[in-house]
Length: 221
Image (cartoon, rainbow, N blue to C red):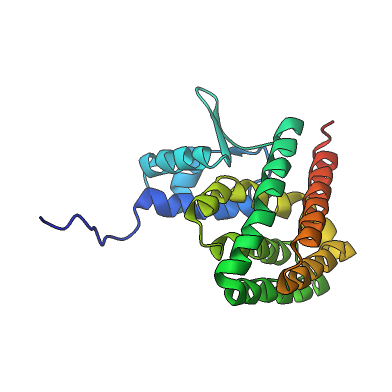
């Protein structure tokens, strides 16, 4: 049987999608902002077809809302969205941590340690983009090393939205207060010691507090 493997570079629409995804996550497009297909196409020097395909992929990731006959917009969560998102994370992240501890303790700890190390200079320079990247890397490490692709794929459903909310709303506060930094250090310590009851309690508090920041910042009840 002939091989069905395709060793081709990423499609144009995939490359456009990844660039736009990063721009949304890092706040180059504000929450709720309109995204002009024509502007993006001109910026990338491509036709509107790959841009339209990229928008469809971003809509599937929950980062973009496409309104027929109106346009494409960066998502803005409702109060219910925020509650559901935090509940989802609280259910998944402690379990991912336990699995990562069993499956690849050293790899997970190394990734989390590197993320915490990257937070320190970001706080010193008040760089909320760099802080947001490090924060995202910390949480994603739990899923990267958990050894369960279904759990990892489930997290990918929300990771873009979480990262965008983090950069836009919580990171500007986190680089000023150090509260988040201290919580991440404590989470790393609890993980390293395998103390998952305490880890789950702190992670629940950590995620819940993020949700409260999102709600206040977006003025949703």
